[in-house]
Length: 450
Image 1 (cartoon, rainbow, N blue to C red):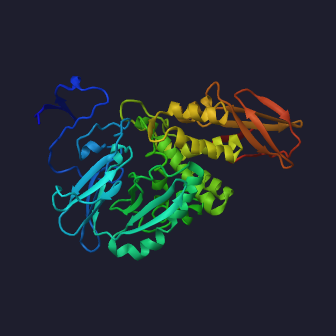
Image 2 (tube, rainbow, N blue to C red; image 1 turned 90 degrees about the vertical axis):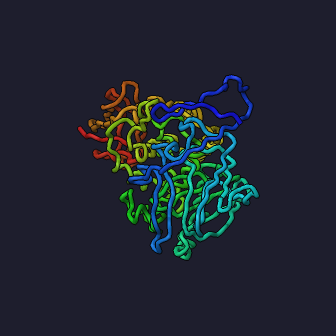
Image 3 (cartoon, rainbow, N blue to C red; image 1 turned 30 degrees about the vertical axis):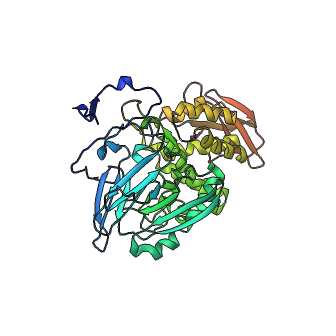
């Protein structure tokens, strides 16, 4: 074993060696020993780090969450979202006493050489650094399976021991949810590692194959409906949202956090798909539209590239609105479903850019959405539809838009529905409807009647 020299520069450690001699495709091992008191989370999971807690019986309960902050907060790594280990990951965690340790992937039988108390977990699939985690606590455990699109999928559940009875009832929704997501978004992306739902000492996090759950067995988001429609009280927001990230965020990962709308917008739309699965299409669409009230339009959804800027928090609700509007413009749910499923196949276990996603959606739908994406992702301007009815004609135009922006708008005239492709120029069309047109609610626009 060769001892290598190293030096620190800010948050980076430079390791010096004859790495230029390594051939592309060859495999090498570097051992790094380090110790210390890890950073504690201030407001997990948003302000990440370690969470040291205790359950209501006084048992130690701990975990780590580090999206945004970065996995280098607790282990040395190439802390870049654009790079994932191709061959998965092994996690060996030692706990004292009777505490159980749960981590990503599958539990491995302890090897003879492993120290006593080590819990060994193996992740077979590529995994983003921030998705690697552990949970330490006094857990109950049960195993289940479902027959999914790729065969038998292992399901494992880890609630705190005294919550087991409650959890068995509450977590029963998982099977139905996965069937829904597989229908709309394609096969669960990590059959090799299984699916786990683990009670955590914080609200939740999309840790790959080991989803963190902390919603206190309540429906909605901490017992309330973020959409304001009441529809969100039909399911547990944290289970649905964080599990949806297995498809968008974990399977398909943005190279730069500036493009995090790919994670959050598409995953937020998965909530609408599940609401639709439960209650029908109109309820799902109503749930999605309800979330638009939370859009602030404070800044662009896409942040600055290369400087760890994730852009606006509107990536959730406005991102979901973007997907919703594409579905409405496409007006073909089977084609929309193929688009979502195709993304999972096209970008399977890859890191991507917004440009790649835009090009894929453009090519798959046959719609020219480049101006549409520029308007909603790269500006904070909301298109305003100005209109009036005069002399049996409907007059209309868009303002507050980019020069080349255009979008079809559905208008109800009482007797029939009209579809108008709208630009910045005043346009007119024959109108046989009522004097007070109803503009479709399914487009994120403002309206002004002249």
